[in-house]
Length: 110
Image (cartoon, rainbow, N blue to C red; front, side, top):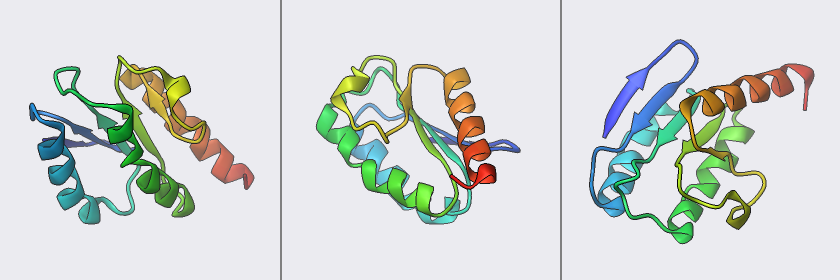
């Protein structure tokens, strides 16, 4: 797992081959990233299922409650298979756009 910090967010990229290894590493690092907007970039080389994505739903909800954002980048999933409140996009640019939109929503009190 690779962690890169920017001014607006922390980008976490998978370098593992197995989803379980990546997920375990992510959960281990999560407490130290509590106050940061997170973008989770899951490699196309990891075999991940819709059920695996559901493991991130609680984290996404907790982030929203804490006033931070959580976005997943993954190219090959049908977003219609996931809840509407789960931010998953195919590119980093779109993930950055989500972060900006959510920051505006928070500023406006939504």
